[in-house]
Image 1 (cartoon, rainbow, N blue to C red):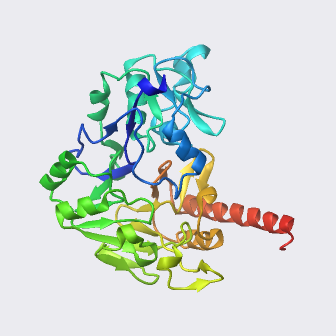
Image 2 (spheres, rainbow, N blue to C red; image 1 turned 60 degrees about the horizontal axis):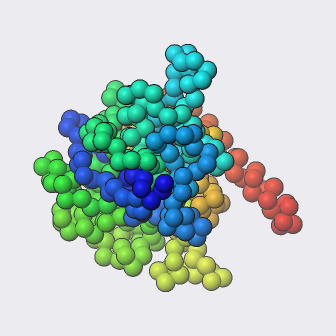
Length: 371
């Protein structure tokens, strides 16, 4: 069944727009064997890479047209995108949510039963960063789902629109998508792209194509530069912070990813002791864009420790750095958006995150005889 199925692969990201949407109906790549062009959560294990070569429908799915295959990386996108079913309006038989976490991956636990649910499911299909949500037959209504993007985050408090393409505001793109000419044309009509900000080394799909198209200045921390990004125009040095616009500050938050030895300026015991990763703080919007530094999952805030290839203690130190910033919105590169009611709630949640991981480290050190 998998060989005849339909999937959409697109980069997961956001887009700022105060008025019109920037979206191309051809911006996603539709293929039964397509793979995402960007690395997700730093790296994909060999077993997951193999699974992409022969994607199979997970047995945990219910019967029906829409399903999740075994390439799912449990990123949570479909589960937070699709609104929870209002159970009081349905019988017990149909009260399940469309997507649920089952055995450490997403699964379709209820097939859509109305047009709205069908639309929600296809929106999730288009937004899945690994193309793991599929249909048994090509959906005739996929165009309708495409036309709904971008989706408003919060029209009253945050003029940010969710789009399976990119962040875009004030002629700046954050963690750019794969290049699509039609999308580029629409962005050009809105003023083009002056800056391309890359939060860290992983999420840099087609950055050169976008930069060549708009003659943009690409921004990446020097400790995150790899051969594929060696020609970026602006390499951030040191520990910042750096200002791009009066309202936009870049904050150095290393720890998530390790710098390759070939690029390292400070090698200790055959490992690099300098790390990249930068967050963007938009002051007037009170919004922090965190890349992979901090995300929100179903169980709460997370530092993606299982995907950390740098230093967890260093990453935790830089989570603490965020506590006193004046923001209410936390917008990660993966996972759920968070709107804290006030600074106290934000501080308590970040402090709890740091405390949880430090206690976990103490237990681990104790068991290994290091403490």
